Each structure stands twice: as structure tokens, then as C-alpha cells.
Length: 223
Length: 357
View 1: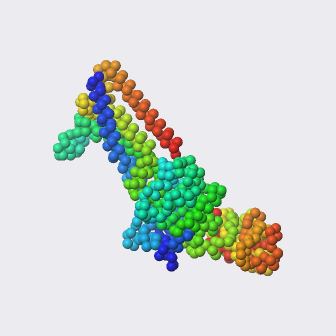
View 2: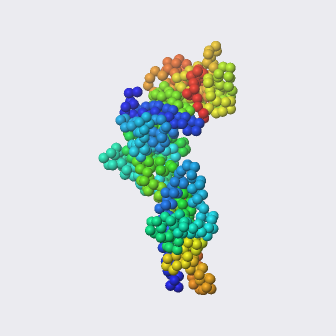
View 3: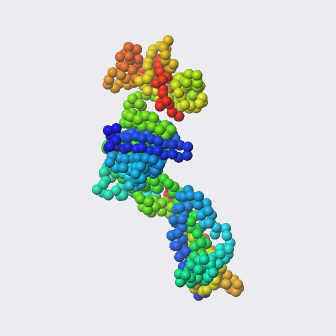
């Protein structure tokens, strides 16, 4: 059970780190996707959505190869004196960010598109500069999108298995996350702790979706 | 133009798709200039270029001594650095802010030393004091436009742009908002550019009119003589007589002829007939060059001071206004209820008085 608590704690830490970093990268990316008329919009949107359709093991396999000692990312991290990323917590964060990217970018993009051009133009005629407009108009009007992005990004990272298995392995405290711990229990026919983990995940996921749909309804009523 | 150095001066060229906008005009230092023209004539594009929301490919925009755009020198001041208020066509209040916070949005962004209006006075001018705590979603269309106008003014603009602020309102609300726009015009000393396709609004509000058609300025100058005193008739093109270059336009009270009407038979066109181009007679004329003779009943005679008066003639439900001398009114014995014939020279209905309905 002690190992399980470590696995749960590691999972939460991974999900929180991933979500925070993804918000930083996903917000400008979603903003660009929502507003650009560039030819690149289609290809970029497709790349962002790839993790939705690819089996996680495919993603994990490529990440393993790329981040390994002979891969391009591995060569880079080694030359920077960082060693290689597979089988480390940092490697898991990188993998999770790619795996959960669409779950953060897509709700944000939809929310930014729904805000539209008009409120931003109005704010410009009221003397608000570009950053001012973004933080005082776009962010508040898109807050339901930010909440969805956080919750879905977090929850999806908590639930990942395939990518972790490929690039993380099973090192307690470093890469052994909840879903891997659950797998181990089942393999060992330890059904009681498996029930605890699985039931906890089920309850957690339900609560998360309840929060998302509840807030979407509230913000719809406010309009 | 002598007022150009104090008012707005704009010269814009914008090509987009198959549409080219190419206009130049100047306004007085205060008062309402109406940008008038049919839908799709480029009025909103002109406003957007002036506000800096759209960048004209070639252009020069200045207000007084301030130059906002001069493409010849590569100068383009972004919208948020122009002291230019903008009232949009439809409700544009920030949904996440209360009325008070909407009003304060622009107000707070102007340093107090640069403010030209007083918060409470502006709120009172537009009669929105009781609404301050409300959310935009709970306001009526007319209330929203009043808040939007106050919000624009509270950013202390030196130019106010209004893009058909009445377009999304019903008739009763239009009258209410027109009243407030008139107050702004009369109580603020700043130039207002007011976009409209309604002659009634232009006649009521504007001092000068800039008529736009297909992206060009076709006429510019004081409203009087251009739009003042006249009637608007919605008609349908009954036939085009290409041999004589003349169209017969049908309406509920009959039909009349107009030259050079740029529309096909069956299309609806709106015609403005200036009061001074209409003569009255008690009997249909014979052997005269008038092509257009419409029978009606005198509905009212205006009684402003002066030698002439406007006679309203009811032609089967459509009001036609004739400007005639009081001497003629007395000689013909015109009075409400009397039968009379309106005589209109076809050439008086020129290209600028015909627009798509």
C-alpha cells in the first residue's frame, strides 16, 4: 500500500507539472490556431491532434527512439550534460506533454474562437493594448475553456499508460505511476489494492467531468 | 476645405476581393457628418480604417494636428493609441463585466489629466444611472446601445465614430436612441461620423453628409439642399425604356418615371424626391413636359416662418412632400383634405437619389 501511495503522489506530481507547462505552451499555440489564416493552420492542427488517434504505444516508441542515446533529442540532451530522458521523471513529463497536448489546445482554441474578434476590437477602441486586451478580455471570456483545458489535461495525464510503459518503465518514485502500479497488482493477482486504485481513478474521473460540465453550464447561463 | 486642419481628414484606398474603396473627405471640427449610402457601399470599411481596426493599403488619416496614418511615410498608429471612440452596430458590451465595469474599461485607461468628460455627467447624459449594477445580458437592446455610447465617450475620444447604432433596434427604440444621439451632438464639442443608410436619421442628426456609393464618394456637403425636406418612396422597377433611358417605377400610389435607374425590372429601389422638385396643381396639367403626375390629398401644411412651406400630399398612403411658396398655397386654396396633383420633373430624380431598398 505504501508503494501505491508513492505511485499516486508521483502521478499527481506528473499531471500537475504537465498541465502547468502545457498551459504555457498551449495558450499561445491555441491563440495562433484560433486566429491565423496561414496555410500552416491545417498541418499544425493535425499534428496537435495526432495523439488523439495514435495508439499511445506508437507515440511512446518514437519518443523512446528520439530521446534515447542514439536519437536526436537524446544527442541534444547529452551534449547539454543532461544525460538521456527515458526512464526519468523529466522524460515522463515530456512524453505526457505531447500525449496530452490536444486536450489542452483544443478547448482553448474553441474558447478563443468563441470570443471572436469583436470584443477585442472594442477593447482596442477603448485604449487597451494587445497584452491588456488578452488578459482583461480574452482570458475572462475564455475562462470556461481554460478550466476545461486544465481539467482535461490533468485527468488525461493521470490516466496515461502506454506512453509511460514505453519510456518510463517501472521505477518506484521516479516513473511508476498509478496506472502502471494497477497493472502490476493485477499481474500479481492482488485484486484488493487493484480495486482501491481502479475505484479511486473512476471516482476521480467522474468528479472531474462533473466539474467541467457544471462550469460549462454556469458560464452558458451567464451569457 | 478650411475646416480640414481642425476636423477629420481621411484619404483611403482599400482593395479587397472584387471591391475597391477609394474615398477622400474632410469634416468640420464638431457636429455630425453622416456617411450615407446603401448596404455594401463601403461605409463600415471607412469607419474601420479611421479607427485603425483595418489598415488601408494607401491612406492618410489625421484629426486636427494628429496624424494617425500616412502610408507615404509608413506611419500607422494602432487603434488603441488613437483617441477615437467607436460605437458598433450591434451590442458590443463585454459580457463578463457589469455595466459599471464596462463603462470604466476605457475610463480607467485614460490618465485623469487627459480626461475630457465627467463620469457621472456622462452616465446622466445617457440616462443609464439605474443600470450600473446590471449585467449586459439583462439589458434591452436600446439600453445596451446607450451603455455602449457612454462607454465610448468615457474614453475621452476626440472623434466619435458610430456605425448604424440603431440598426439592431425596433422602431420605438430607434426614436429613444436618436434622442440621445442628438444630445451628444448638441452637448459635446467633438466631430461625430455617423454611418447610416436611413435618410430620416441623416436628416434628423447630421450637419453634413458624405454620400458613398460602390466605394466612392459621390457627393459631400451640408445636408440642406441635399437631403433636407423630401420624401422617400419604396418602389419596384416596372419597366426599363432603354430607347429613352428612362425607367418606370411603381409604388402603391401609382408610378412615375426616372432617368438612368441602375436596376432591372422587378428589382426594388428606394427613391428620394426632394421637396423643392415637387410642384402642386389642382388639375392634371396638359401640354406640359412633366412626365410624373401623381394624384393625392393634402395631409398637412408646415407652418414654419418664411415665404415657403412644406405641403404633405397623401398619395394612396405614401407621403410626398412639396416645397411651395405661401403665395401659391393661398392662390390654390390648399388646405388639409383638398385634392391636388403632384408634378415631378423626372430629371430631378437623379442617380444619387435612387438606391437599393
